[in-house]
Amino acid sequence: MSHVFHRHLHQTPAVAVAASGVEIRDSGGRTYIDASGGAAVSSLGHGHPDVIAAMHAQIDQLAYAHTSFFTTGVAEELGRELVRGAPEGTSHAYLVSGGSEAVEAALKMARQYFVEIGQPERTQFIARRQSYHGNTLGALAVGGNAWRRAPFAPILVPATHVSPCNAYRDQRTDETPAQYGQRLADELDAAIRAQGPRRVIAFVAETVGGATAGVLTPVPGYFKAVREVCDRHGVLLILDEVMCGMGRTGTLHACEQEGVLPDLITVAKGLGGGYQPVGAVLAQSRIVDAMSRGSGYFQHGHTYLGHPVACAAALAVQRVIRRDGLLDKVRDDGAAFAGMLEQALGGHPHVGDIRGRGFFWGVELVAERAGKTPFDPCLKLHARIKAEAMERGLLCYPGGGTADGRAGDHVLLAPPFIATRTELQTIAARLAESIEAATARIPRAA
Ligand code: PLP
Image (cartoon, rainbow, N blue to C red):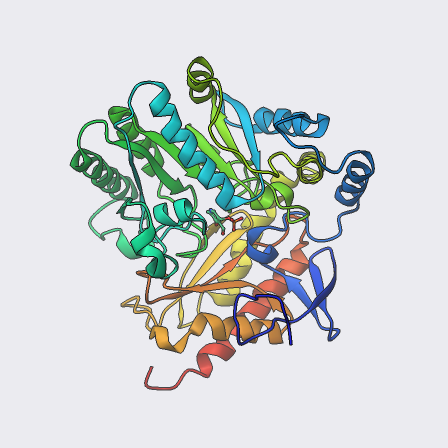
């Protein structure tokens, strides 16, 4: 009997014993291609020698020093590296231990900014339905993932949720992508006005939606229109790139492809590539300067902020990405991967949509394509696909509630940036077999 409090109390997962490159092996000797990098984490795959060497060197030199007494050379270097690659105007990186911590810090930073500049009446956050920003209470409150929120809803701080940017389901046939994006920005404008003047702190959104709705890419112009609305009302724009950032979509930050400058960006997963728990908030100088001129500190903190070994791992991961030209590879091979997925799955009667960028792809499943009708959620198609995929030596990241928080199924793919075209081809083929097997076993009436 396991004494580990696992995610599911009735199932103990397979025991992972070793991993190398794109593969991970369990104690039964079975090998899987890690086609989702866990949950879009393993950007360099497993066992990268440069990252491991950097971690070893850091542990030998200094494994931990509390940030209320010391900074460290490695944290300073990571800060420099992150600011160097961040959008114009970014001056600081606040270094935390994961995605939820990054989002919590961003929410509090945004709130404190307004307290510092004399607008304490701003107390509200607006985010989007079908979003995911983490599982701590603040991050869960802004998130729009219905089932994750449900049991905790009575104890969450209030947040307003507007429509996600979901062209597949919500763009009308009589509107262009630009008109659809503007309609959504107008909805945000109305939501801000409904709160009253100077009540809203920030609009929080994943630049490319990830876990809840299965890789929702924004329509062109959507984020520019959103930025204009935020500026009109003095509202901050927080882009959550915990999943889609740090190269996953082919640019270091996904917002580079949208032509917008967020006030705060959260990053995590791909930052340390799974070698250490690490995340960061990248802050524009005007936010930091206001705090600096005001109280002079950020009223926040955790014991493991800027952990030296986490910083060493993140720094090494980011240097390898730059040295090996992996962003170019993600863009080039990502385009090829799109073609492979289209070829393997595009004609499947239960594949409704294939969407994504770079090495970040979502496949949405439907019972019936013309009406985009989801499968009955009781069938748990996403869980069946996950099981079929594992049977075939494939790790993917399926989810349910894709369409509206309750119904709908998708599979998320986020292969390591080092995956070869042959491995990408194998991923597409194994996923097609898994989807075919899972949907073929669905009872006819469904
Ligand atoms: N934000 C986004 C966009 C995420 O996808 C996730 C995790 O999936 C989080 C925040 C939370 O990150 P973590 O699980 O590291 O706390």
